[in-house]
Amino acid sequence: MKLKINKIVFSASLLLACIFSVSAQLSPAITSWVLNLTNATGYGGIPSNVTVVQYDTANVYVSCASIPGYSIGPWTGDPNIPSNQDFVFKITLHPQKNTAAKTTVGLGPVGVWSNGVAIYNASDGMSYNNDGTWHRNAYYFEGSSFDDCLGHPDQSGCYHHHVNPKCLYNSADSTQHSPIIGYSFDGYPVYGAYGYSNPNAAGAVRRMKPSYQLRTTMVNRDTLPNGTVVSVANEGPVVSSSYPLGDFMEDYKYIAGSGDLDTNNGRWCVTPEYPLGTYAYFVTIDSALTPVYPYTFGLTYYGVVQSGNTGPGSGHNTPGDSTTVYTSVPTINKQITVSLEPNPVTDYAYFYIDPSSDNNIVGGLYDVTGKMVKSFRNLQPSMSYSIDFTSLPAGVYLLRLQTSNASFTKKIVKVQ
Image (cartoon, rainbow, N blue to C red):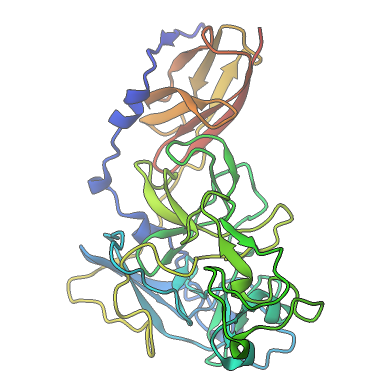
């Protein structure tokens, strides 16, 4: 059967015209949780993952014990034992940038992973000589007690992660944009380690790099990252094999533009779940999958933080009377099936979208820098389309297609 080829007129403005019907869909802040619908238990027979999700027009309420569904432990040298935290975290459905003084990312839970486990910041809660100047990096001082999933319990029995939760998602998959793996207490999503190279469009995927850099020229810990010279009484230990660089959070300095992420360890960008863009945090790792400071969030939150999740006795909110219980796990088509030829291409490439794929597909063609060179909208399954390469220079391009819950990426080589 010969396919009918429909030539598309490409325009960068077309992608902006594609508006997903957000009002007809539940927010990812409601649907992105690992729900426990079978009364499953984890460590110590404690209910695992997220047991209840409730929402109203303003907030989503996440009930959890801070126990994952996968196996955890042992914790070398850590005498603490995980216990049921009986959390009910409140996440706003309408996050807002904080234009006033930023809120410090403090101790204890600072967000919640998608499986209901608490997110902690980079600190272990202690400082050198207990003077509150040189704060200890939990990954260096407590890392030996982390289990294979890079988590451990604290004195209250709260199992948590300071760094990338490696058992929650595939942090070795650098070919796909990472999924949402949690939410910060300012209501913005937390993604895994990989995002689009071009934050303004869905292009090539790469590992996100933080803009916090190790102060490699520092020998004496007598100056803070902002240049403040501390008193002799507040100096940290001399850099040595006993206290190597990286031991303390102040061993790092934020250098704007040196990585992909801002001072909060996030950025405003397009993501698969937010095709119109959102502020998003990313966990940070290196090419060997080793956690990289600041690991989850920077020193402050990007957005406005609601009361109820931070401070003493936090994480025990009471949902309102008008909440709806979310119990359904939507059936998601995990891929867009596309056949494309020829490849390599000299003038035109033709692609056909399989009937099993989602409707109303949008996307773009990107060069190696992540720049969108062609865009398209409202592509439909059972149809064939063409891409005009005649005006493009030879090189490698990426065809990226997506819907609100599925995506497709294909490398195309243009030759002379």
